[in-house]
Length: 151
Image 1: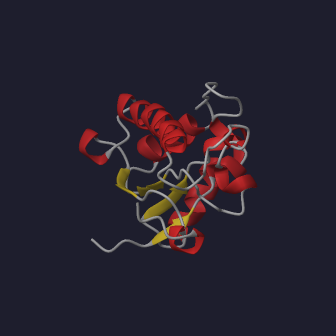
Image 2 (image 1 turned 90 degrees about the vertical axis):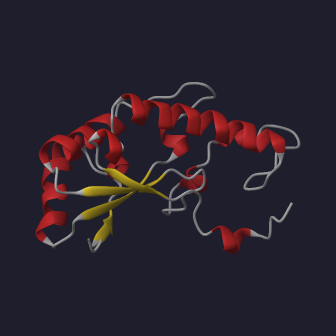
């Protein structure tokens, strides 16, 4: 299986255009979509997690474009020329929190976010083993450019 992927930012595409845009990816010969999930888009306030824009996209790929697979990129940092790289603003408001490190406050927030996201995706059977489109997951983005986190 040769992966021919293109990046797809569902959070930038109005729902009314999703089907057409996904079809255009297929028309280009792609068999995979690389999909970022911006944390700050889905959690605009601490603890207020909303996947109502994520679900229609994943449902559409799973049910209408079954020959496409997804390479999931859930951050926590995604870059994607998105505000604060997809990190939520409230991380900056917490004293002592150091983003993109192993600092315990940051890791606690990331763990909470990933637990919510992955639980949601598992519950909706979006992983390949469950019959869904997600075949791979890449955490973080461009980490080597940020700094050297050894310990």
